[in-house]
Image (cartoon, rainbow, N blue to C red):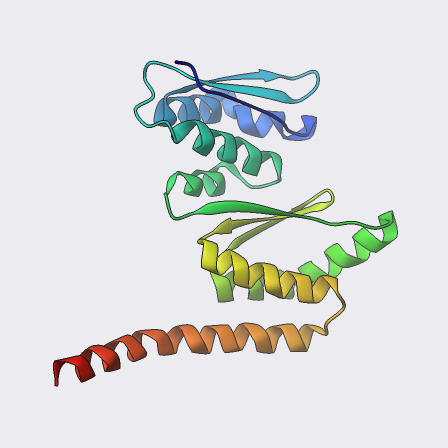
Length: 188
């Protein structure tokens, strides 16, 4: 039984999916056991299983890797999606050309500060490409990064978002202590 997946990526990202001398495409195929066919005319990508595929979820992992590269991530970052706990999520930005440009600038922040703060606080990788903001990370951290981004999209001040991120970081540092305290209490 052949499993297939189809998607479309921007023509400007086809070269990144293929890689120098086909290295990225070959690496995706060898790791996942899929076959990837790319139409450079329209950016359509056809992914299908092969007899080398050992896990049926690899078809979707390969699709997500290609999709992540198409959304502006480097191949190196996209390969994190091979981990079962790492996911890709995309936020579609809507509005006029000027509105989207303003929103993207808010998400990036002055000298990249907002984006760096979100990435550092949530351990989520962010790519802003076209009208989309894409996130790669653990699902709970993607949720936190999405919340910070949506606050910026809806006009919250950067300081407010930074405080939200600091609270997240503080809470994450408290979690291990809470677990240890609960375990310690259970033992008594």
